Image (cartoon, rainbow, N blue to C red):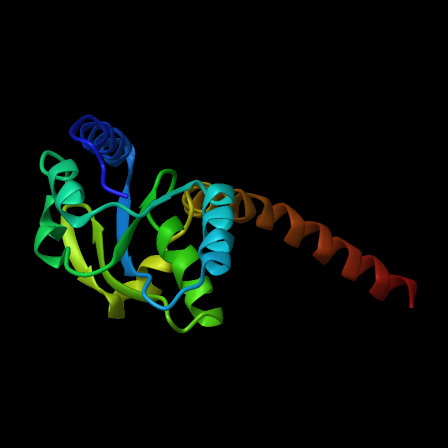
Length: 174
């Protein structure tokens, strides 16, 4: 089924709007996947805050023109779908990494993050990026550690004195 000019403009506008909000994009080849497998992938993508869509390459190229994902234009060859991470940069990579373990026909071609492209070899590294909540938790742990150490250092002389008095008392009781 061919798209009319107005339908093409709507698709480009929708993808552009989502791409401007997205933090990363993964382009993957879906050749060899069944309809049922694609449906499973779309369902998991919705739950993971990943925008997943099969868009003709020329329309994708136009949609990404004024975004940070314009660097993937030369990689738009063949039957591809786009997966845009809406929350954290590793969401789409994490989803496709997990899905590619089950279905070997899924091939990640390129990943774009922060205006740079990465090959499919970098999928593991990007998939292991922490989510926003995990990054905040790590930052809070790093910020909290010096204060905890300082408080323990201040409390140690008193604790040492109490232990010394208790040891002297125990020795005199014997």
